Length: 374
Image (tube, rainbow, N blue to C red; front, side, top):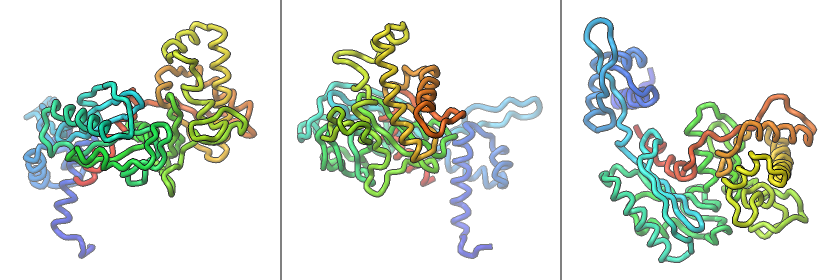
């Protein structure tokens, strides 16, 4: 036996194992916990009492039983801690709160045009503080606030390293956190959406996540984790050159994937995704032609990436709710026509993330951080 393992370590391990077992299973009885963890009933009882006293678990009814006394069911208290996610866009912000299961407790959206000015950060922090106040929770229940931005962030989330869309390069989280008495961090919006995808699914090992919104974003998932890279810009496929003589990108270069595969590239002025897909599904020839051209560019881009990283692809972002399996099948066909290595097995999938995947993904790191401490 390892002499370095103390009684305190064992107690801590039992406490953690019991909580996480209940977390993973939804509901369990005392006996089921004891059986699965090979612990004595007194040990399980002692820890259940402690977890219940700390409001981390609660009694949740009883299990059905054909004989004898029905066993009490124990479940975690999802609202024991919450995390806040804020999605900063050019003309609006989305704010939501998630619980320990990642479920959305409350959300709101409000117009607020971004500007790299103190007045903006003051107004934003006031909106977040008001949102938290309406939740009727104790301050210690709030784990932190993640701000999703259309920009690259430092590895530690404390600063924006590249923010040409919002003109926010160099902004430090202190610009916002100085008004908020909670831990705060920046999150790249596409990486936030990919984080939500990982949270929703347990079958992702390695994958490329493409967030196709008004702007394009990407994230590389390796071993179930978001790969940031040495300088934080791994996965920024939006600036991969498709045509060096193409349209100018907001980054200042020409022909980036952004200029061919984003929603901005798909839609015409004053057009919406709703309107576009209504026309497309109705078979309007000009819209079918435009969609085919869009998928051609996307196919070229995915093939190039797939040749370098031979992994699954997940299509997310604002466009994902409109996608049908027929679109993905057509995209596979187009890729197989262009690639040197046609694949019989489909490797492109539609995102399973909810509509608010970006702000949820900004909030999840605080939830994960808390769970790791139990």
